[in-house]
Length: 192
Image (cartoon, rainbow, N blue to C red; front, side):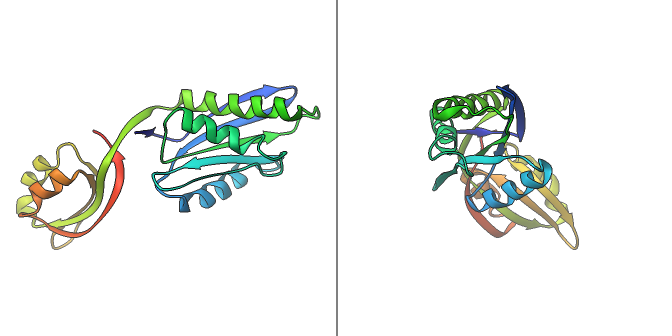
């Protein structure tokens, strides 16, 4: 399975209408509403904010006022055609005064989606965990060595060291005897 590494955007113009494609990595469908609201604030006065998303457990789309199945579904078809998960693709349209018709809209939203996905850096995903671990300062060097192949998202230093990490089950098992695992949540994580 693949996803994208970072948020990316691109722009195409078709018959005076501007289509801005944006691809965003997400973890769950709960992220979609927040990301759409952020884009509505960033790209004010657009005519349409059409989107599709796919996660490991869910998928969906919105035509946002365009004729039924001329925007969101074509975007979702591109996501699925690229075998991507944990992504949100939004195509923002600024209407240019010329109607494109259903076929033209489908082509426009498909092309805007393909262009932004092709521009994005792709990553392989594997099953893993986001976890919080705590350990004494004296074990930090050993823990860092054992965490090779993991992503350290956050480090906190109080009485002990606390890391928030993305890692595999094997690595989590290997550090289990020298750290306290505060919580772990199974997720699809980037293969490092």
